[in-house]
Image (cartoon, rainbow, N blue to C red; front, top):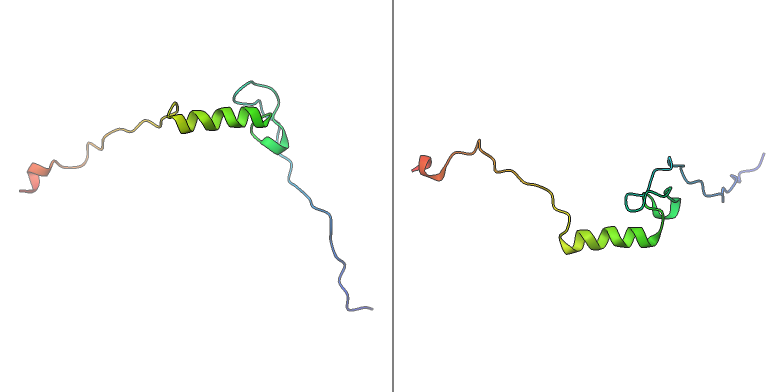
Length: 70
């Protein structure tokens, strides 16, 4: 028996289920998941950066008013 352990060189990437691209509905690609291409990925990013997408925020009504603390 030798003291050497086998070296593993293969890179295994987990498979993801193909989903429709959120921009154009084409099947997604592994390199650009969940998008189908770099173009669709960039379009989505530009919408986030320009403020087109927004997460709605509701005021917390359970917080007491500041007047109640006085």
